[in-house]
Length: 69
Image (cartoon, rainbow, N blue to C red; front, side):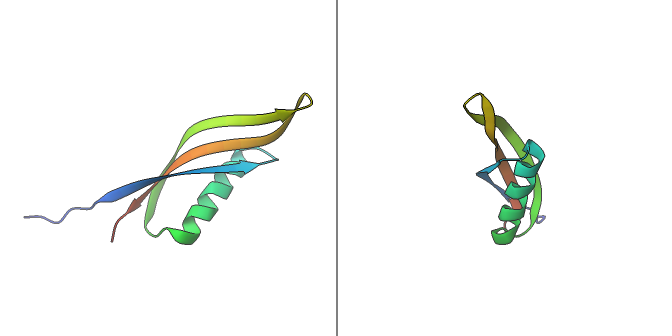
């Protein structure tokens, strides 16, 4: 029997007052602090929080894929 790999997917949400790109980087940086063997991240959803006619926060919902040890 050959040895394969098994991955897990965890969902995270991150927000930034600056941009979607910044929120994505924050999500990855935070996940990278506690998860090992990250192989990818899929951005599932982009949303904004608004107040007084202005965007207050850019939010991303992402799936982080990592290999189980």
